[in-house]
Image (tube, rainbow over all chains, first blue to last red; front, side, top):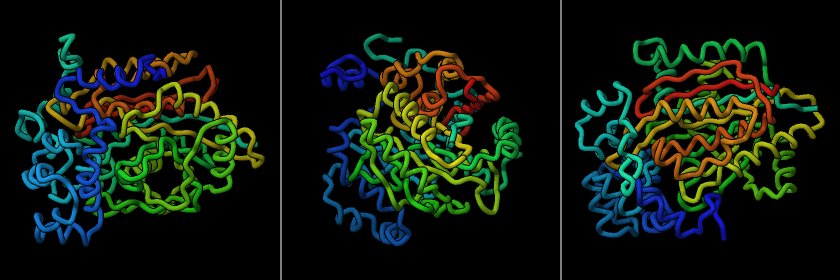
Amino acid sequence: MNTPAGKNIHEYIAQFDDIPGTRVYTAARARAGYHLNQCAMSLMKPENRERFKADERAYLLEWPMSPDQREALLARDYNRMLELGGNIYFLAKLISTDGLSVAQGVSTMTDMSFPEYQAMMAAGGRSPEGQRSIKGGY
Amino acid sequence: MARISAGVGSSHVPLLGVAVDQSKTRDDYFGPIFQGFEWTKEWEKIEKPDVVILVYNDHASAFDANIIPTFAIGCGEHYKSADEGWGPRPVPDVKGHADLAWHIAQSLILEDFDMTIINEMDVDHGLTVPLSMMFGQPAKWPVKVVPLAVNVVTYPVPSGNRCWALGEAIARAVESFPEDLNVQIWGTGGMSHQLQGQRAGLLNRRWDNMFLDLLEKDNDDARHIEHIEYLRETGSEGIEMIMWLVMRGALGRKVKRLHRHYHIPCSNTAIGHLVLVPD
């Protein structure tokens, strides 16, 4: 079965692991992160945001996610949440619930402070040079 | 007969909606971004499209992780602005064009596109920000909208080739609609941006402009760009640019560029904007 890339499905998925500092939201991640993402999504409703803010741990116990996912969410460890199947479009609801801008939340995944991240963006963003391929180093 | 008279490409960064809603569009940060849309605002006043087929992606607003349609078409009468975690944007409700939308949905299914049909949903910044960029802050939107949502979140997302072919089929569907309608198609999202991981903040001015150049040409080379190239070159969320291919595919082989704008940065994202007409 050929994919658009002219590769089989296994090769198609494997190439995504070659991008530095990036976790592509594959089916495997979507499966692992289903309840984590649905929980983050639930924060779109004001009444859920209030209940979450009142007792975060109790709110998370209502969702059948793994203990690791629960701890990562409580710690706002976004890179860890991505590793455990979180997707940024869902997790953005958590960033908003915390009253942060998306850029603020996103900056916590880099090795920069928010002012440093903002300065990098204002100067034209992160260069793709050397950031495209782990194996190729380009 | 209905006809597609123009295609518009535009980023749909949520912060642009905030800038509009909080009247910051002329400040030092947002001014240069919004100036690049002034030409289009004036042009839209003259063009007066009846309907916009608005190709966008839902950002976990109407669709959760449960149901993931690859291509979904809004066939409802109206849509409200979604609450994305900070309350709904204060924009008018979006009016649908149910007759045209159902006609397109039926035509696409007969052309082997397995469309998901939506009757009721809220629409998020992916759809309302482009409306604000092109029409400002009217009391009601001057066009009816056919929302066309593309999965660009869960992989595999549709190929560029499939997006382009969908655009071609949409053009045929519009041309077979009996009512005399001036229809535009908008492709939204992008350009380069990455909102996740240690590589967050990646932007690629050179690649983005290569992509804009390609869309202006009288060939369909852009449909063959692979997912991995978008991911490597334009960041994980740069994949949204495949939605511009639906717009470009609907315009036919040869196009004329009326307007183009590019600005870095807006929040995490490179802003791109393009106005094309069939030639």
